[in-house]
Amino acid sequence: MKLMVIGCGGVATVAIHKCCENPVFTEILIASRTKSKCDALADKLRDKTKAVLTTAAVDADSFDSLCELMKQFKPHTVLNVALPYQDLTIMDACLECGANYVDTANYEAEDTDDPEWRAIYEKRCKEKGFTAYFDYSWQWAYRDKFKAAGLTALLGTGFDPGVTSVYTAYALKHYFDEIHYIDILDCNGGDHGYPFATNFNPEINLREVSANGSYWENGHWVETKPMEIKREYDFDGVGMKDMYLLHHEEIESLAKNIPNVKRIRFFMTFGQSYLTHMKCLQNVGMLGTTPVHFEGREIVPIKFLKALLPDPASLGPRTVGKTNIGCIFRGIKDGKERNIYIYNVCDHQECYKETGAQAVSYTTGVPAMIGTAMIASGTWSGAGVFNVEEFDPDPYMDALNKYGLPWQVNENPVLVP
Ligand code: NDP
Picture: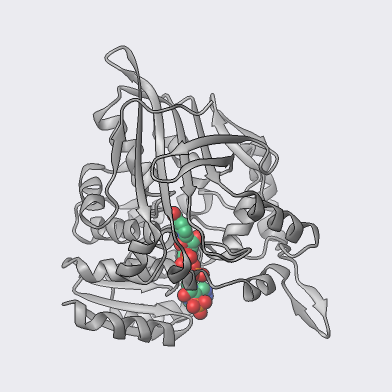
């Protein structure tokens, strides 16, 4: 099967490593903005795989650039591991060229001052009650187009979203009659030794963390100030950590796809030093997305900051410690209350030894490959736009064990107040 991967950053590096291990992918085109990165990765992997690897430069913001390449290569499926800004352009190109589409993050506008985008955004904030810059409405609006074309678009097959939603589908299938409460806990106990760095794309990461939090309760969104809700949790493999409630995209799709759910929350761990740095950068305007004039040219503060911060792809050799990401479910089975916790513990250095990337890229890149393989092999099929929890979780859960993200089930977890 012919796969085209767009992007060649931290997540892509792991996803491509893993695609090379899976015989369902026979030809892989690695296409990104900087071709030299694609060439370096392909050179590293060629000896280790039976898949034929080729590379190309592509501007994923350009429909024409994407179509030109896709018409030459004729991919069965496109895995988008570039940035969420490019989601819609890549989906349009897939429709035009007859390819299935897979990604790990929902659409986000790059220019949040664009008046056309802002008008739609502000209407959505009022109607839905959360103010995050990203939401699924843009991509769900493609459902009829993908249906009519007989193509599949699979959204959000990273870890969170992705594995967390598959865990939910698995818990519902095997452990519950109804799930009422879902707490998604994302803990990174890794230490890279820098005073401040982000584990994935700084622009995307800092926007997410500095935004208002929100959770789903009794059929509507409850919004909080950034970092307003804090809890402590003792994570297996990591230990006690502070974690904060954030808005996160899988809450939106799980609220729609899991019947009878009463509350869904998402927590992520942050150290005090990270939060102090971020607050300071925010206070001085370095997280701004509006261009400012500086010495005769325009610069976007957050893009300039990105240029100063360590490249997330370079954190691999320095990062030690573990991640622990999972979901605590509360619900009923055979009329009785039941609680379970499904989670994965991943070691940064082991990920680095295997792929050259740290665990945050690894825990996203492995499920990106698995979701793509589900579509490529026809294990998951259907015409339209889907989130991962809409399919049978069992083959995906088996693949997580096989490809490096084994999961555990705790049937008596400590609950989050
Ligand atoms: P990186 O910034 O490391 O990589 C992004 C890659 O996309 C780079 O290779 C970059 O090229 C390329 N790119 C950017 N713009 C364009 C463009 N216009 N045309 C072609 N290529 C482009 O990001 P990550 O690997 O950390 O993240 C990748 C994706 O994964 C993001 O969408 C992120 O939100 C998502 N993610 C999802 C998670 C989940 O659990 N679901 C968790 C973490 C990340 P260049 O090398 O030239 O900069």
